Length: 558
Ligand code: ATP
Ligand code: MG
Image (cartoon, rainbow, N blue to C red; front, side, top):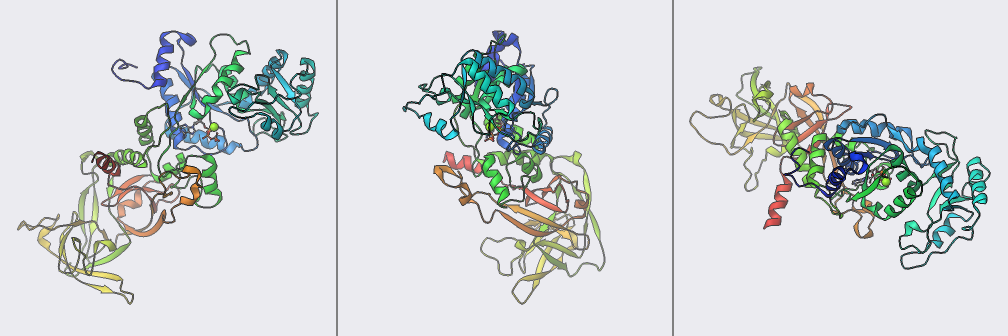
């Protein structure tokens, strides 16, 4: 890094810099992002992605995408494709073609025989339950398997028999032969291979034995030439096993080193694939790409820019112990990004019609309105104004509560970029709902200012009725009411917010007829809204206008 001398770097980068200096790995840097293709990527994965790809690019290294596809039961090519699409959207480019742990099944098998030949692995005939019971626990001794001392020849014969289909699923496993009394549970003769007659999405029926995560991961790193194998803290306990496996394979040169960092946790958010899957399967959301999901696809539909996700994870940084970040911080990065980029538009959500009784019948005036108040380069557009406009129901009250400065009979307000109008009366239906507000306008106030300098207390947005387009607006509140859903052993689904999602009709200005799917605009006074990826007459509220994060920081200081 050019200005590395002035910037303090996190502990992972520190380690990388140290290794470059000492010419470990010949000064090379190679990282990888290793998803299991059994679900969609979420914002937690984005953190790992930006860390791994970021380190590679900052230090002149490379980062590969490797699918950790060792469990055919839950994995599928559809996830492989989706993960690659999501990476592209996040703006990272893996070095070369995607890699697959399944490409190494042959080498992994051969290395398992190497262990057997060294007396470091054995075939166990016991079932999974017995093996797990014998593992013991912390401070509780492990029990050695009665099959632990089989001869090398017998083990080789049985392991080949496992591969060649001589045994039923679950009848035998291959285990490392390490130490049943090790303090680290992962060293208590962990399972390396299981028999599973399940076709694999890439290797089909070539294999009926599959390596476990622990046998596949470090060896895949070594095959690819990974230098820094960066993963989340829950794998810290696996590190001695990672190192044990590599140390017994007589590999040339420096073997990869595992480094763990704290996973990303966000308030009011669940980042467990299992629970996200339950949300989808039980219909709490419409799919993995629902705008309420913390998945990359969900956030994309919601209108979160990839750049905001990257800025957010950079700001959160890399830590050695787990913590939870406020979701408002993420939203403030999204808001800052959109504030700079999103064109301004007008939309009336839950509209009510306003009739301007002294407007010349049939006349339409086209107002030239800036697309972005701080950025003249964003240009202007023409917005039609006429004798009937829509405003929001919330912007009119027959009987105003205290401190209500918006429209009410007898009061003058500004219709932004148009005229000052004064409400006269309103028409109400049998249920007491206001169905039409009648106003007069002052023709001397074009642009919204009175020549006599009189002031009004509020400025409202509006949409010409004759020119308005119909739209549907999805409003979102927190999906989980609890700030830490699932903490203290609770079921996170119990804190699902029943009011998380509301749908409203809206009238929007004609320029929104040209919005691109996925484009985000600011609806003035309301927030940022993303046109749906499949139907651009549907808008998802991305984030509101107010910076809740700043408020939280202020409250913390007081
Ligand atoms: P599981 O293994 O339970 O299916 P996972 O979320 O760990 O779920 P993987 O596909 O194994 O899914 O994850 C790929 C990479 O992303 C791993 O290196 C993992 O450590 C990292 N990762 C997953 N969740 C987070 C998170 N919340 N914060 C940071 N990194 C994460
Ligand atoms: Mg995992």
